[in-house]
Amino acid sequence: MKKIASVALIAVMALSLAACAQSGSKQIKVKCPACGYEFLAPADN
Image 1 (tube, rainbow, N blue to C red):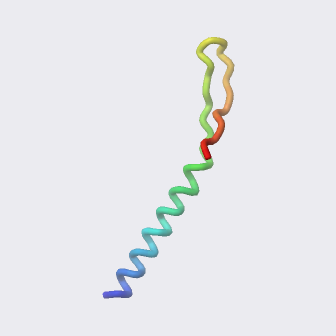
Image 2 (tube, rainbow, N blue to C red):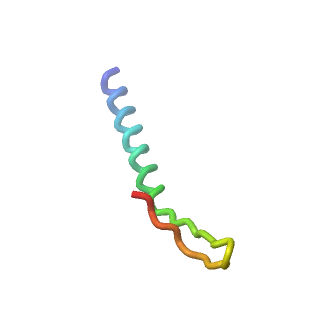
């Protein structure tokens, strides 16, 4: 039983790390409503 719980915990931790790694690579395009210029928003770190 202890082995199954350990494997499940490791799997959950690996999935949570994979989700965090992919979310940082998104770049959001922003369009200025006044002039219409489109640019990439800076990343929040």
